[in-house]
Length: 121
Image (cartoon, rainbow, N blue to C red):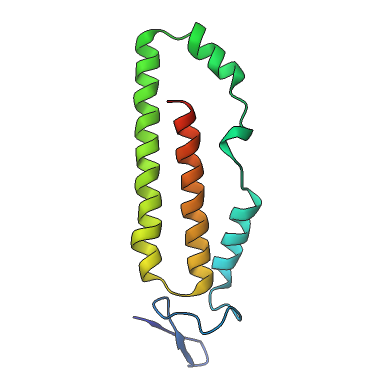
């Protein structure tokens, strides 16, 4: 169903209908989620890994390093799949601007996770 019926009986466009204008938002919660995502933005290089790198080199066995490498590869690939789904699946379906903004911010955070895990590979 691509329409929303308000308690007053008015029908408004649904998630499959593009926004006619930026505002008013039909889904203000989606804009709120976009804004929250912007407020927690970080970059992989901001995470200090110095002590972790020392532990990696000194305290782990070869088999422990191998296990962790496989786990990091799995997480990296999983986040690639999640990011692809946000962009290729959900982003093509849901049309209101604020919902697309929210989905794009979620997809972007997955790219940051991908880059962060890749620092460990």
